[in-house]
Length: 379
Image (cartoon, rainbow, N blue to C red):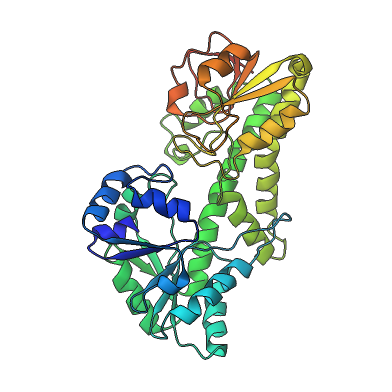
């Protein structure tokens, strides 16, 4: 939205959530996005943004970018219905010559399915899939720096999509739709598997009584082949697990690496609880959780493993308290000093920079991340 406005285009921000639209219209961001605030201010001053909540308000000229992706259900199977419902709602209000760009992650084959589906309805819209691949909170920076994958079902749609994204991206990578869909899913699944590997190593080292941070230092010091090896921690959020499971579903559940990664990353939380129960009588203790967002320096709690940990501890501990300097959507979150004061033991769930030098009053802290250096970290 803001990238296209910065490029001189007028953007109709169409969303059913009128609260979000009102927030944007007032000049505020509904979530943390570094570098976006001045762009929003400028776009509003230049009248580059139009805010609407009805499909009927969408212009019948110009490209339409759809940010509805394929979710997964409670069994981690893909649910294609929301994409079709969104398109069905749009069709009466757009013209046949408009470009439709799928932007969010979709189940493999969705782009070609949409082309065929519209053909059966007698529609001739141009269809493209151009996946968004930025890191949460840093989209403004990464859109300017990273290549944009472009795919489409016809040469004409491909040309229009390429022209559109060349206005905001430094270069394009043009592939076929199924290749683009796999590229997005493979990227996220690979990252998820990387995190599972280091989390599994962490649990093995811990069971052996070994300091995993020392092991990692030995592995990585001046050793280029281990340079990008990630540290352990909660691997969560709205994309990595979901996309890994979509890939597993496409592979008829023959994606063993994906399933194993899920068991490790989701299981880390439960392993942590079991370790606490072996080391302490937590039934008589108040446990404080530091960080409820799914990753550091953002306010997004979607699929955060901090909440899985909270629910697991509520079955065993006397009380569970939570803190987070960014999250504003959870009324149970308390100020850090209150959580520290009232807790018997603390768990660093999200390595926000605010915790790096925070006064934790000597309370024992469980730190899977290896983030804290001056705290009373317990194994």
